[in-house]
Image (cartoon, rainbow, N blue to C red; front, side):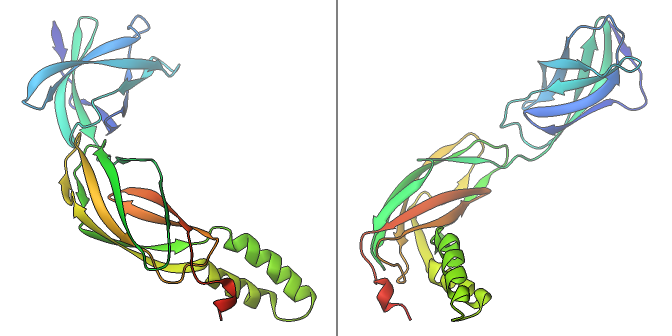
Amino acid sequence: MAVRDHASPLRLRGRPGALAGHLVLPESAPAMVTVNLALGDRTRTPVTAHVVRMGAKGLSGLRLDLPRWTPPGSYEGTVTVGDQERRVVVDVEPRPKVRISPRRLSLRGRPKDALAVEVVVSNVGNVACEVRGAYAFALFDPSSLERATQRAFQSSARGEERFIDRIAAELSEGYAGTVRLKVDHGAGTLEPGDSRELRATLRLPEHLLAGRTYEGTWRIGPFGYNVEVETADGRSQEGVE
């Protein structure tokens, strides 16, 4: 089998599950070709790549899928087309990604409550994820914008106050404050392919209103995890100045 001597190797770039490059292939070339890459311990690993015809003078796209945990970096090898080989370099980009179970954290509590929570975090990307020991995030009432718009129109129609002032006042009421979260177990570096249970204590802010449901985003690494808090009790709206 001959290796074609090209000054520049064929390059494929992208995230592990979506690496792509272009090359010129004869019409007789198969729909799938073999790429031999030095992965992990540097031994050559055969990987199947898909050929996508571009329709212009034999120009084709080459699509390659590698395991999602393949670390970022450049990997060298050869691509086999028929009885010919060509040098190839695969540039794997970082793909930070985590999954958290349950998919949404739903809680019920009162102002200043300390709630114990447990979630499982899985690193399904190809770079390490750092789980910090403490977090803080804001809680908002997602219905506050709709309520603010309705009341602002009513107030403006009666000439009681400016539309924008009523909007600002209502939106301010929808902000409940900051959640303080401490990771009691599971903080530290989470390597690609690993999963870990996190046990944490979440302290609710003091300005929760009774009968409201609030939402916030707990950011673990690159992932924004949705937290929903339904108030079991709280200050009544009449107590808000």
